[in-house]
Length: 509
Image (cartoon, rainbow, N blue to C red; front, side, top):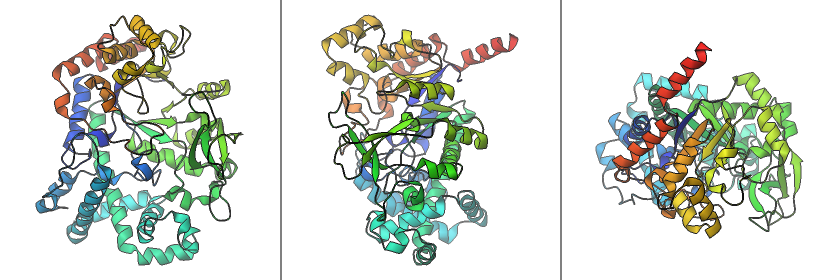
């Protein structure tokens, strides 16, 4: 069970800064200070992993590796791993969105220069720190760095199109390519090292200020990833290393053909035979990065929709049973009591909620979903349970203003009646509703505090491009917004001082 508290959802890529994308530098520390000033105690973000197709943090090249685009270049320059002139003549990147193509191209060149500077002048102490980092992450880092170097060598091709011996992860081929691509491998290890140093420092600062971090784990991984390449035996692949079945969801109210996500499916029987070692390491890594872990698509641990890979849609599939509580029991046996939030949205069978409750995990409540029907709607605050996390909306939803503008008239009417609002400040009305809920945790996307319309939306599910780009400016964050956010936090007892008082009262009983 979690304490009564609140926080903000903001992915680090959305932070402002001069290099085209949010970074783990001054602007990130300033955001922590904003959280402290408004009496928030949580910062939630999306997966921090290196992104692949579509720039989606939910479709990454590794479930373990951090995104080097987040590395703060100014900090590298301060430490002598870049020269001042390396940061001159930067492109005129847009401030309000991430233009991923040019950002990736420019940042990779600069990080390459930084790697060369590091090799030439790093102190013995730092080189030992790098060696220690490699040793601490030897279960995934060598495979990831080699995967990235090979991907570059083979022109970006999917791993099963590489030479057969290395595509099959044969030891002799690994040894050969590690020698051939040693410098390229060193570059990717260096990027992970610097990402880790900067993230650990930021997390330490946040924790010391009383801010807990909430990481995100997508249940499935991308096919074109170091995870599948290096662990192909625990996925359903054929002799040519292609997926036999892929993940998705069946046809429903939202889609006549369902959703074919395309992720390869786990062979849970083989994972169980290893003691769920891969999943344990995945949680171990997540808990290095954050204090709490949210599992995306929690339902998949109970059962999942398996679509034959030959099918173009998700119509033809079948439900298969997941590992249930077994995998969580093994994780807890190894790592202790991991603080976990279960994403339990969408059409669920009762057994999914039973599994969630058996594990004692809080589920999610989305306020934007609350006004579509009647008073029995489970997303209405009077139907919430204490062991829950309430959101106005998630990264997949429109902003509250955008949602309200597009909602049917009867839904708008119910929202106005329930919130006693005329709809003009619907974002604050839904924030207030979220904070007033009995749910232990309340998480608000920063776009709501800023009062943004659909222009601030982070992701449009199903749209092939143009997602994950939104960025904000601190100029948008007006003093009145911060003051009102703090007022609501205190009014509904989610602030640190009330948390302390509540703890003292509990100790006396």
